[in-house]
Image (spheres, rainbow, N blue to C red):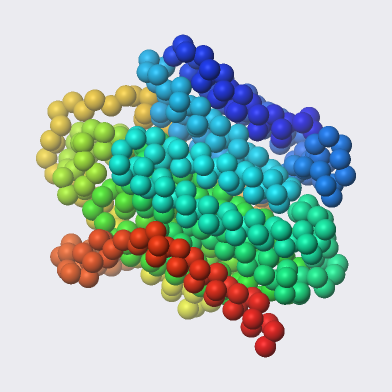
Length: 537
């Protein structure tokens, strides 16, 4: 049983290699078999160790913990593991086609899954770096998979900018090794709590390097520029995977490093809340002005990451749990929206919402499922997004609360704008949609509603958090949501839809790779000022 974490990494990787090496298209079914094996192993592992995660530590080769490669799981990693398995299932079903040669795509998809499981479970900082680097390379290949000029440019942009972040992360690891003599996360956590080493300039500088690298992976402001480029050109299944899980890998790293430095005397909450709020506002501002359906969703990923950071930056355990819960919820409704948008784009042959009309008449089931995703992301009562946003609000000050409400207003405005695709005459008589593509979208919609209605037992079972005080629906919540929709409609009708010059300027604004690197250096410099220079004054 102790070897299950290793199996979770190597089962999808071995399946990927077998699929790639054999020429028969029927070998694609091995991907489904491997995914089933991974699912059974994960469930078995969870049921075995749920009551005592201290037994999950595993060191390869029996080496000492200080120098060996180790895996370790807890409630957060296990829940993240199950979320990843579920989203990979949805993407696999959505993209699966045994009649077509998809060996290359399945190879990279499954290989990425195995590497990502390693990233989630590792207890070793250097191997965390290795898994981050492998993830970056594999995602770059999947973004460029369509082999078009735009996809190649977006993939190179993603690869180079994220490589800069990974390099900063590696330098931070080197400084930690210099200071503590090991790179085992548990050991460093203990040493930080029991010594004054965390107050040294070297360790503070290491913290800045680690968090700067994580900021790029998480698409935080001002380092989010790679994300909309990648989402706009990637296959819809890949976009769902990127937005639903891969970007969350950066936030998972943020959680891990934050917990490792939890005992250090760093006041990080206000800084990262400010970063989260700025990311959320800038992301939703760009989203409202877009006309490309995938760009709208991509910028909303940036915005929702900001909301997650507003929760995860908190030292209050319940607000932190809200940020973590919103991470899970976002994976569900954003994957739903990207997969649904992919079907619409394939049918209408355009991503411009101006030319997409009558979707409800042409595809009523898909429209209902997409509306579930829109209600979830905009925070409608009864749906999962409302619950996690309510938990985040619980620990905010009045000023912080209104910042979150501004973001929610922008989100409502943006999806009211996007909802116009459902109306109008039926322009397609019999749209050709593979019924199999509906299944993952429907399952994700059910998951969004389930997480909204049954959030109390789910949160208690998975994260051991009591959310009984947060109700999924009431007349007050419905009234408040209706007011927000009304305000969002006015904002859309009299500002966004008028397409004034500032709106056009925001929509067409692009940041070059050179400027993105300058912004990375600026972010790094600000962090040095806040966490290294200021404490010395």
